[in-house]
Image (tube, rainbow, N blue to C red; front, top):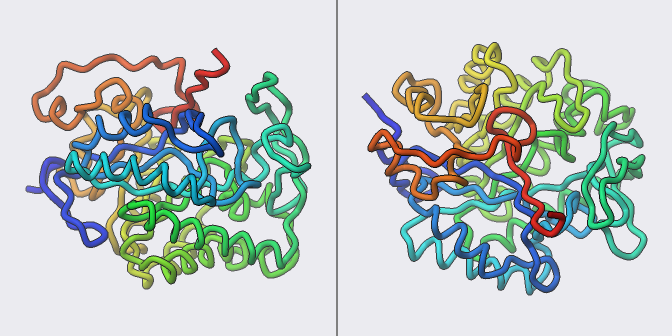
Amino acid sequence: MTTAFDPIRLGGRQLANRIAMAPMTRSRAHGPGLTPTPSVVEYYAQRASAGLIVTEGIQPSVVGQGYPDTPGLHSREQIAAWREVTDAVHAAGGTIFAQLMHAGRIGHPVLLPDGLVPVGASAVAAQGQVYTHEGPKDFVTPRELGAEEVRATIADFAAAARNAVEAGFDGVELHGANGYLIHQFLAPNTNLRTDEWGGSAENRIRFAVEAVKAVADEIGAERTAIRLSPSNPYNDIDEPEPEAVYTALAQRLEPLGLAYLHLIESTPDQREFVQTLRKLFGGTVMLNAATEGPTGPGELALIEDGVADLVSYGALFLANPDLPARLRAGGPYNTPDPSSFFGGGDQGYIDYPALG
C-alpha cells in the first residue's frame, strides 16, 4: 500500500514524500523591486522536508500584482533574490516550484505603478475589497484585455517560467484557481467575451490551455503544473455548472505530460467530480481537500486510498515547519490561527505584517 511517506517521481526529481506545502500568499516582498528578503529564505528553507514546496503566488508581470508586497519574477533583481531562496531549499534537500499568479481583476490601482489598472477577461468588477497600504479598498472595474494583450499575457507567463528556472526553481505551477486571471477566463460570470477567448467551454478554456502550453514549451512539460478550483466562489466567482469547462480542460491537458494537476475541493461533495478529473487528466494529481479546518493527519489516508498522489497542506505547515516528521510521529502539532485563513478550509493564507 502506498502511503504519504513514500517517495514519488515528479518533474524529473524524486520527492522524499507525498506531502506538499500548499501555496500561501504572505505579502513579505519587502526587498527592492518587490523581492524576497532573508526572512523569506529562512521561511522556505525551514519547510524543505516537504516532498514539494509550492511558493506563494508570484506575479509574472507588473500588472499581475493583486496584493501589497507580493513578489514578482519579471526582473533581474527578482530572479537574483529568488535564487537565494531556491539555493537554501535545495541545500536542505527540498524541491520547490514557483506558483505563477496573475491576479487579473483582483487588486487596485494603488498597488500598481505608472497609472496601470487591473485587467481581466471582461470588464466586470468583483464584489468585495482588497487590502492596501492605504487600507481596504473596493475592487475596481478591470480593463478588458484586448486580443493582442491576451497573447502578450500568455507570453508573460512563459517569460516568468523561464525566469523561474534561471532562479533555480524545479518547476512552476500556474495559478488557475481562487478567482485570479486564469480562473476569470474559465468562469461564466467573469468572462463575457464573444471572441475566441469566451463563450463556449472550448473558448473559455483556451487561455488556460495556451498559457500552459507556452510555459511547457519554454521550460518543459515535466516542470509545468496548474492549479484549479472548480466552483470555488472565492473572489466573486460563480460557476454553477462547471462540468463542461473542467472536463474539457482536463482532456486538453492530458496529452501534454505535465508534472501534476493541483485540484482544490470547494466542498466535500466534489470528491466524485475530482476523481472524474483525475481520470481524464491521467497524470499525477495533488489534492487540497475540502475540510472544516486546516488539512490535518486524517488527510494522509487520501494517499493510501488512492484518491490522490500528493496532498497539499497549508496552515498546518505554517505552524509546523517540520510537518512531515510530525505527521509520521502522530504529533504533537502547533495550532494554526484560524482567523488568518481565507477562502475556506486550507486553500490559502494571507499575512499582512505591514498592515498590522
